[in-house]
Image (cartoon, rainbow, N blue to C red):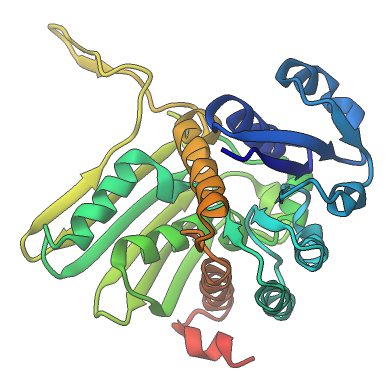
Length: 339
């Protein structure tokens, strides 16, 4: 079995997650080199994983003929640019979401990927969560019949730093974009219209930075189904991640993951563990599974399961949600696409 050699661009939190998954959980790969302007800050965990190749210039990774694929885990503003350069160098690409906050730049980058004939997988890891995937597969198999309602609750345990908020593109494009992808995944249908109501309920500084921290979004699908997404930047009890699909034959639901399934029953109360604290714990298995899927697509010469269009369509939805919130009206996806 040929070893797939991979370069990782970006050694921040998500770059580290992917490096750990690739080294520990994906057979037949070698993380050959990582790149980051501040790569020295990652020395400890790079040493622990045995990754020797290090550089401050991502172009060194793209220039290496022996590297088969790159993981783009850098800041969002660099994703599209690096994607284009990697595609032109003939590298297969795994890119964290979003590709860019500008729809035109995303379209241009995807066109280059298509022209160069390389594979592109987007980092919507929640599709690979075992429970969420089981809900989707059983829904697709017709177990609940035609889908009428999808409910997604996605609440972070604490808000991100304000400096992060300022450069994130806003909650709809940073946080809720995962939920937009999950809604499409569960529905098996495309979104036609969006309504978003939002507020600043957690931290006034988030509002001062031009963002929101609490939202309820309604989606309408081509199939006639509807979805409701609720978001908060601060759930005091932990990382709240739940989905539900309701149809005319029944309902499927996936609840939160907890450290144990043990419940205490006493004379005054019943108690159980809180949800796992945040996404690193909650989706550890999903990160490994998405990388295994990407490597298998390279090895088999097939198209990845989560492609470039799956990066573009949630951006349309997120852009429509932002406009809906600001203008207090329903916004169609065609309205956003046509610009």
